[in-house]
Length: 103
Image 1 (cartoon, one colour):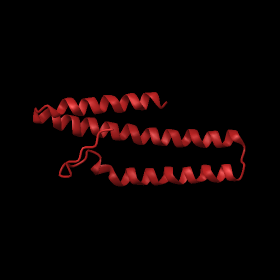
Image 2: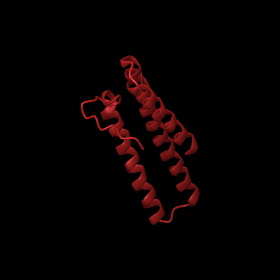
Image 3: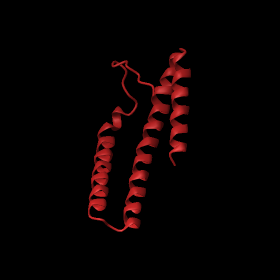
């Protein structure tokens, strides 16, 4: 997993940060709800339905962040003309591969 430690770099998702945080808090609530369902021994199909909803929500966040990475980080690296563009494209490709494997 790559970690870009350049703190001066503005992240591509910064314009949507609040929206991402709201969505992640909602997902966090879904996870707590799933825990409650298991504790209360709810019907397994109902739990699986909620797991599927949570998975879709996480995929939506992932795809949004990937789009932000491509349209901001990769585009900016390409515009600067340095070798950084290869690294950014590689990171995006690896992220896409992880997303595809997780579905």
